[in-house]
Image (tube, rainbow, N blue to C red; front, side):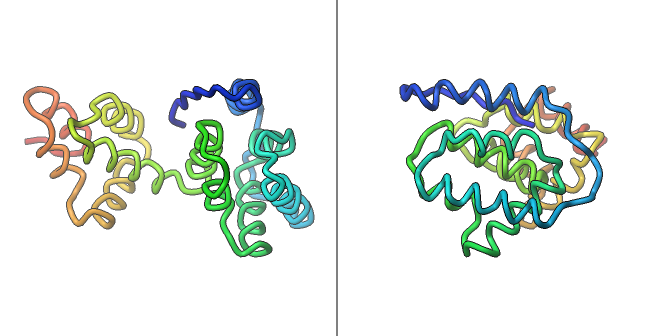
Length: 187
């Protein structure tokens, strides 16, 4: 998962940010596919109430995001959307704009659809004025032996140009050759 830097002048957010990151990094998550539909419904309602009441630093939000298995979290997020007619990430976007809420949205996006998340981050790294080489390198290197092919396909579908073409256009020299080799271009 991407490292998230959280800066905030609001004490509540500043206090909760380390708890969020610590919780994500230190908690064992069950990896199986079993879900508890009743728990998903209950936690979807808990999340909705906390967000509706603008309690964005509510301990229950942290608990659900940092302790549930991917399958259980997906069930909760899907139930949230089914029951409340809006995705949790959109609901979070409608809240007070803060780095803390942005971090929660990013975590949910990365957990629910990592390929889409990485495509979006790559697109932003390449499209911004002056390529964000750190982000570009980090994602290509860390995903090269895992799912870079799928991310590349997503990138092509979303941008009508392959990731190889975009990287070749925005980089040069040995750096370009290195990234293209990781992307599968061995010329």
